[in-house]
Length: 212
Length: 163
Image 1: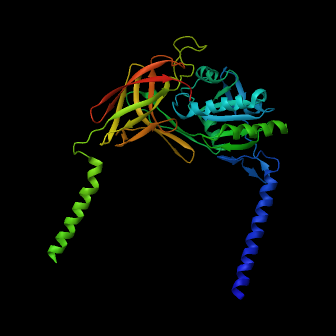
Image 2: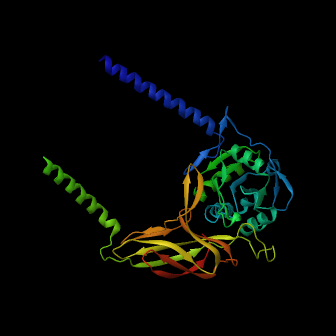
Image 3: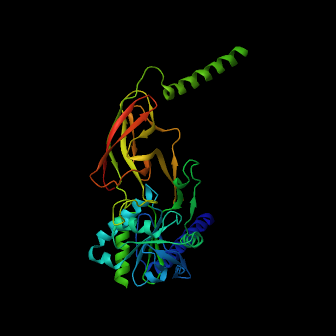
């Protein structure tokens, strides 16, 4: 009898705990895009979305561009490098498909490719690369230290691999391959795993566009 | 007692040999390789688009994908690929760990199981094309020759298209 009372109390505690959890997540999510399938909620500190610091980089037209310049519109951002044959182009095709899925509203979003290989990805190389996907896409490069700090802030990283001895320019760069969604105020709202369905991302962007 | 122990060791050896046999399969079986659905990703603005001729640096890469089927009773192994489309062609694998994407050359080749198949697809196995000799545009085609451990060399027609 005593034992079953103890069990009952445990169950009560468990229910209470889940209620509290549901309430908390409800609070956090209330003004966030909801999504499923590979999405991770943007980091929340004290109930606030994290604002990404303002890094100053160089865009594909060889002009200085800082992340603050992207504010006013939601931004979809990926890190990659143009020598990457397999994964990076897929992320870029995905960005283009999100834009297509958004229709006219797709014009109200920044699509940004940030290189993790500043050595080879000069503004000129980036210009030809991003334009091949969409003329409106933005390519950003900068000095390696800045890029490294920036990707850390997105909870990502990159690591240049040793080049082959016969061809020093043939190196690959291991890197995290998430797609990030920032809102019009530069706050990190979503981090998507590689391969997240287009519809999922498009729905979240739509929710942000409706907010602003 | 000794003989029992010998018998046990004998049994162990027999078991090991029995286990090893299907892997080696040197007993006369042959691989029978067929390749289908070969395609490659277009290049992204390397030579032609808006930059004029001679652009180089990044973007001079692509990857070829396909399904390799083996209807034979012996496994085989894709060791290498050659073609005049690119200066350097390698069999690669993309691996993912904690969101970190890595790409590695498969120095021992890629196994094609007996009575099975292996698919080369984005974010998995691919034939990496480096130092491309020309732009690859959707609709273009080029030839690759795949070389297998069995000695087979198979010509594949690769069509360029978007993923």
